[in-house]
Image (cartoon, one colour):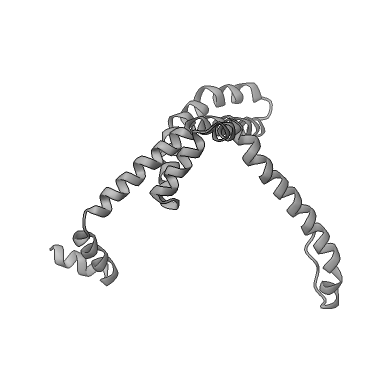
Length: 172
């Protein structure tokens, strides 16, 4: 029965299952160590506080969506956002933490995670953590504004090339 199931799933899956069964367990220990370190990094970076801040941001969006969906009954809709939706979102904050831990463990080596932990424990690292919204979101906003401006200028400059070929330039 087991052989039939493996055969039915294809050679790639069969090879994957065989390799997984025969790989040394040291890899699992390294992954556990990396996950432990990634969890420590998430703690030092106060990822849980970031989840709460994101929930606050979601509140603004949810308020707007609930108000638009319920014209004339906005106060009732906003009350339900506060009493039902936001507490439900908060119940999922641990999932955000786990996703960030997995992300760090996949993107960084144990050494890189340890270096990051050391940095975030410094005064500068703690300043970064305390001002993450300003220090991370600000550059993203600047980048977004720049891209919008540069794109408008580029489209304006190249409009003639589109027109020469009988094409319409992108509307900006």
